[in-house]
Length: 429
Image (cartoon, rainbow, N blue to C red; front, side, top):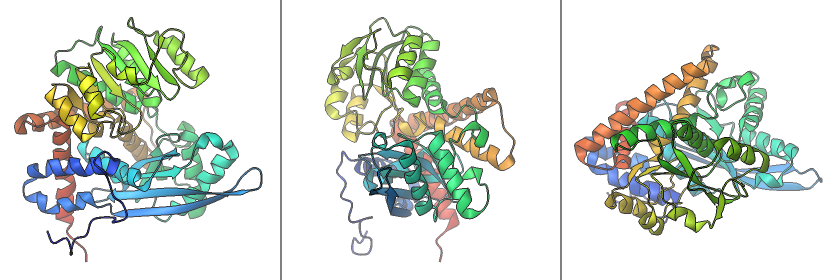
């Protein structure tokens, strides 16, 4: 390829191998040999379709004006409208949001949802804002990105530090600006505003369902299996609860408040109550405190990284004692660490299939909003399980056929679907 004719995408972004966007690009490079004639379109995967950076000025409660930087990235829209969450975090960057949007493209295609990939974020520590300030910031951000979102264009959802209330503000702001109640513009809304039953625990349920299927492949009995969970928010806690119900022992947990361990397993009811009261696992009386780095040395059968990206480094990968890693977070394993885990025979169920339960139920919510007909939670869970199990089987068959890792197989399945859509739609003009 002539670099003069095809310059690097977003030349102001200089990713390293360990950065989110750098990690994604390496994952694309690894899948190209399995794309056949579609490899000619692979550069499409390396270039976000649209990136929007917005200034978000708001008046604070004390009368001062503060400015925040926000993003919305649409990575690929070949298969349908953009779909992906919005996160509020002080470390949010454009490069991170680009990677998260790209992973959403892969994730949506991997489970065969009619969506492209998108993601958004604001660089802010929401804990420093009052509820009214948070609302003003959310509404201004929604107005600024309103030019590219919509029920048939791009549908945001909750992510790190965002929740149903924030989605309600986003839906209301978009609706007021367009003059019509548009419940389908976001998912993850409160139930009485068009939200779906089962959405809050859907991502964690997907982690459990894919983990259960993977454990069967490994002949690993969940009854008595030892599970360590990093991140104890909606995803980690829901997955831990389901594993515990299956007879597993949750022996270690880590979040922003601390790390804890109990070789006999936690009392999940007590731990859940503690987290609800204190905001985290730190200080839980039913466990011993653990140094943060020592968490990665925990003797366990299953590790669930459900926090932020880039957590499993090469050094940590060499120390892990798990047989199975279930990626509840987006991009938690660096490429070098991926290779080490593969060499050590530790099976990794990658994020782009493992945590796809959330976006799958978001799809259900979107469909229900359009029809104004809503399903029961049991119906939601049955549909979710069927989609997740079917998607994982196709990915596993691909991995077995090519003798590749589940991550590369997931990318192969997803990229084939994305690039087939790209090829068949053609280029316009």
